[in-house]
Length: 142
Image 1 (cartoon, helix red, strand yellow):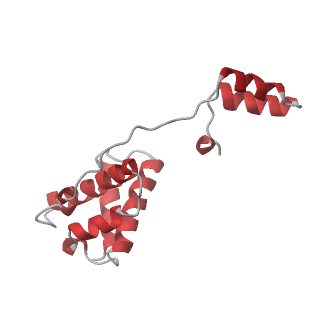
Image 2 (cartoon, one colour):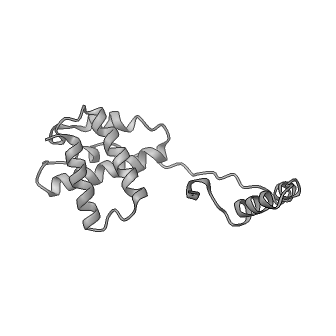
Image 3 (cartoon, helix red, strand yellow):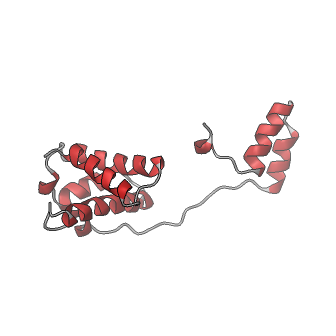
């Protein structure tokens, strides 16, 4: 049994039970699990261990990212255990990273006024207005 084929089974089941409901969530889960599959050379997930999980978690340097990726691996190995494919969960044998508070830079009122003051065309004004006032983010733009 190859790791990548088990990932497909896991994603399918998580969709069926309502744990994965969006394409973005599936992308995140697949990304973490495929990185782990590469780290274990796509070998049978029944024979992976905590050192394999730790090696995968080292890919992400920020603790908040590590926490998220670890939770995906914990969920995957919990599913394998519940399906009777593993006796234990090697991801639970790793230490959880301590979360760091996130910092978000926000423009001051003066900076917003300056930015709106330098636009030259109606199109620029609309784009800047949407970005500043409506909170449009680049990841949401198609």
